[in-house]
Image (cartoon, rainbow, N blue to C red; front, side, top):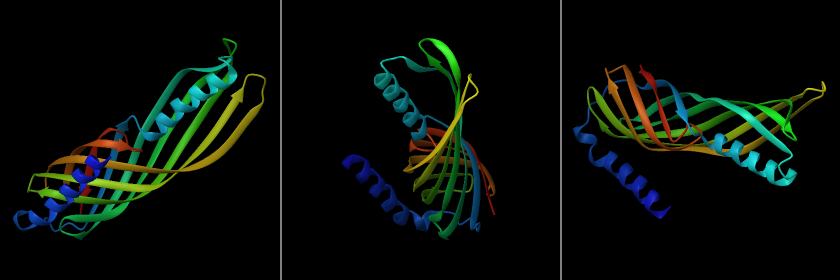
Length: 199
């Protein structure tokens, strides 16, 4: 964790030292759409499945688990040439079949909705290429609906703190429209890619 923190501090320090050499695009706003893999909520779901198996002794289990997302929309406003502030909205949907004693007994649908205020720090800005880091911390709300084959329905909601830390992001394209990819961990995933528009 200490190495991770020092790496982030070093990246932010580079923002200031490289500022004089960087291109000012003149765009204050940027909107992006992304799709990622292995988000925090997916890990939460896997842990929940393990707890269910251990508590029920394996009598209640899940199969045919499918995830959509995380799909996210993000917006940043550039307060300095190298610093943007804004937010990330994310959704992840998990569908699975419920089994009781190896017999299918229903289906379950979980929707994770996240809102993360965020900052984005560019440490390399060129006419057609850029590199940056990003940090967002906020909340995720889970909406759970189980439909049993007996006709019974169960639902519930829960909320938890969540985050996204993208250690390294790279973008390429024109001064307004760019494709990008990020590596890190959090609700947007350990790897995500998307497209953003600057205006």
